[in-house]
Amino acid sequence: MQDCLRKGRYRNLFENQAGAMNANASPNYERRNSMVIKLRRAGASYSKIRSLCGIKSNGHLRNILKKEGL
Image (cartoon, rainbow, N blue to C red; front, side, top):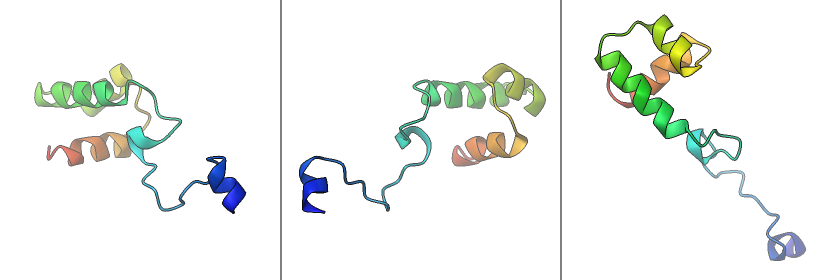
């Protein structure tokens, strides 16, 4: 364990690795979310937003909008 810590290979399993904190997240994560919010405020439908922003499901889209209180 000490060797692991010394070499920087230890990862805390309780770290928040969701969303933009995830190492596999797209660098455009925040930009995409702001575009989703702007489109929804402009009255765009879920299907239109999904096709423009590359979101696969309505559930994912709802989660993004719910965080913004929309």
